Image (tube, rainbow, N blue to C red):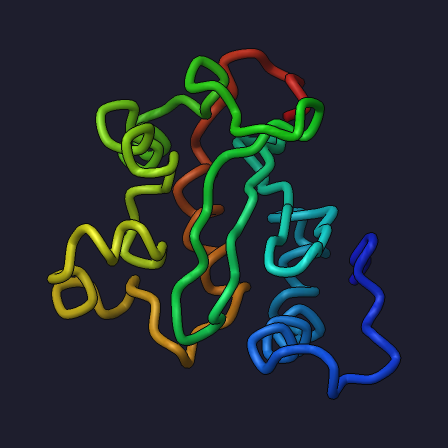
Length: 169
């Protein structure tokens, strides 16, 4: 695991329990396995946010910025991110394809912090209070890890494409 700008503090007592749990989950084999498989890469932790690139289609990546305060009690809150500008990725550069467009919906996501339309995301759960019960296999709960969230995003982007191949978000 390579976590840029996120070396663990010398004294673990000075960081919050939610950050301790995230750092523990980032060190788990399930997170490392996703990195080795090329599903995600380049995690950068600047508490309480994690920026990570997720594979899109065969050979592209798109960045996600995740809000992780109160992790894992509260689900991660994600949005597509432009690494060059340090700002949300404009909708015209969002991944395309049937599954990707159901998750990153231009009719819903922009008015909801650009959140993915998924039951593992904090915004999706907050706006669809029935999702945890209706989709338990995909919904966030405190026993989940950050790898679960990234697997859900990755699964929706495997058949997607970026509108500008190699755009390097």
